[in-house]
Image (tube, rainbow, N blue to C red; front, side):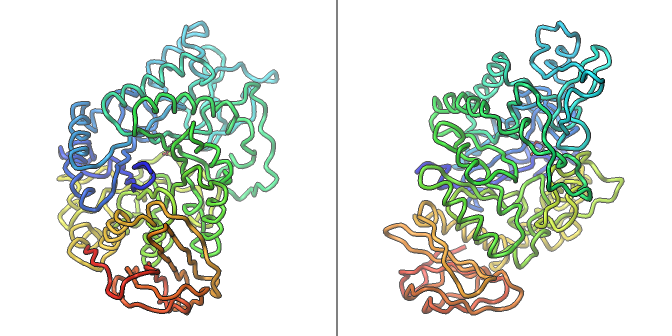
Length: 545
Ligand code: BGC
């Protein structure tokens, strides 16, 4: 097994993790000072969202130089120092890689836009207006409005899957491929351990730019009209797999370095599995727990289907939060977030933790004058989000709550986004001091996982229970058999399971049980989850937080 299969990856949004120079914006030097915390927590790798030079229209996903560092975040020397410190602490570092588009301020785009005859015109996707005038086809931007913007000077339209300030690169042009592979090589030579690759299935477009067909399920009440169309021609084209093979061939010349691909909600696990084949991505984000209501039947179906589709050959990932979604704890509730921690860290696959979820940070209220994100959610309405899909992403990107000092220990000055109003009690320092806190639960589970062959690499098998609100599954290797049981109901449940013998409680999500019980009937309090050692000794294993 490789590190990226057994390890746990922690996502840092650098703008909001730690400010070191008092400008209210997190930076690389600040993050470096917090790496010890991540080592203490027990994660294996950090994925840093973009820190490249950018006008920040989409907060760094609009890049003007893929091989630099934006002055707000520091310098390349700061990045080197961060990497050296991370490696000294035993942490690996993944960087975000955005190959599909650039900022409209990128020198490539400025040159491409300069004239129809520019030598780099074809680095981007330019088309004449439709014969009757207007955009060349009916494609819509993920962020609303047409996916095409007219360039008055040349009379042609350029394609942008996201904002008009993020023109799409033309991946059918071999020169673009070479330039972007050089970007990967640049970071690999600097020593990064891999990449989170943005919007992978959108890299290559239909060669004929055909109109997307209508979506028969579209509901006009949905805020984002993009879902009027089915993503058939702008998405998931077969040629994207050739691009991934190029990436993989390069990565394979740097042993241990990996690529994790961002995937849309609507891909079934069978499609994700194809993207994760051994000659393509190492990992493809499995979005289902992130997009599902907190219901046992849905979570079980997601895990079972993923397992069935992935089989033994490809390796899944599990994600409960990221910078594009509402906060996990706001989505499902604080008691539920403890159960989510247990689920995330015991499923078969590589878990990703979004910064702050380990202390249960909530979506912070953002007054209109403090709003920064111009983008509204790119997803269809989603029951799991508990509200309209068309919402700002700011509330889930607020500064990390380190302690109860002014600005939550994040910065000496008021930060770029407001601090969550609960920071005086919901913060790392307070939860480090509390052995029953959510942070202590995460740390306990992370450390337990590290020493557990069954959690790191064991098989997964879900069990039938007589309680529809409960989810139970086994993780097994020849030497270890673990049972995980979660009660997702608001009231206590007694769960009956197939005969398994006795089990020793390793931990409850409430961290207050250590008994050995017959596993045929298990009493669980509301929202409680329990991890059992099915062949456990009479005494609880000492795995101290
Ligand atoms: C990022 C989003 C971003 C989008 C478009 C995605 O990979 O996760 O935050 O808005 O790309 O740039």
